[in-house]
Length: 131
Image (cartoon, rainbow, N blue to C red):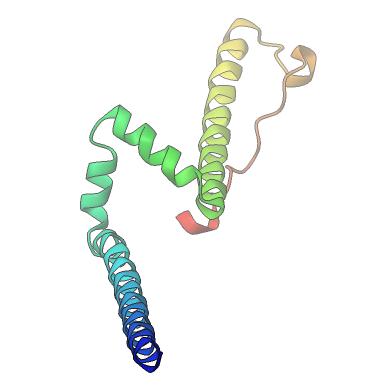
């Protein structure tokens, strides 16, 4: 019986050592994964022009890049702000052009008589991160 207990203790010690080894390997793998995941971020930070070139190489790549960016809440806000700014800027240019055409056709032209929105005096201010 004493021999059986000694063998059991030896087996328990071996199991404990193996569990410790597995835990250490898991920690090492987690650290390696963490370090590896930082590499692409560091590359993008250092090589923004290259990243932009890759992200806009084809229409498909650009769409996929924006889809990935749009999943992040902060990026979604920025993309929406840029899109709104572009839309509103284009809207002002379109209004100016259409009003000029209507003035040529109708010397009595006014926005209110045609039910059109007036042209804003000032242009749309760009989002703060674009200035």
